[in-house]
Length: 204
Image (cartoon, rainbow, N blue to C red; front, side):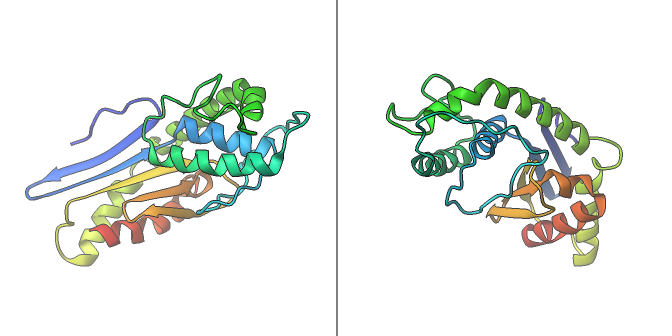
């Protein structure tokens, strides 16, 4: 049984007898916009996990008088909030959910439109990638293979995967059931399967 897919979101789910599982794959617009601003402004925020630069690279911006060190601190706080909030309706101009004194606000305002356009294009690309004939079946195949290795039905579980277009093949865990994975990893079927397998095994 598969759930209807909404734009920018892929669900893989099976309900069978006493066992059910779900893998949700998403590419969040707010995250992409925030990462765009990070790279365009050359910010180096201290956050964990620290994600690599975006790929493809984005156009740099300069805003006169910006305190980039303070903006990086503000970006780190913003990122923590975005990761924790599944639906950040507050992340919009003119305030972007930030104090008026925030050094990050002028940077967001300067590249907001470009960041939205870039993020929307990447979302469409990632959504198409994760649902095509080659990559779409990977989560189902991995769950089936893990169940076979374990010699039993997999336990009920939900795994959330957020895809980001960064310049590295890898994953960055946020919780046992929530992980960031690079677009490059998803694009490489062998790498996607190899990275997904231990995540599923730990939950199944």
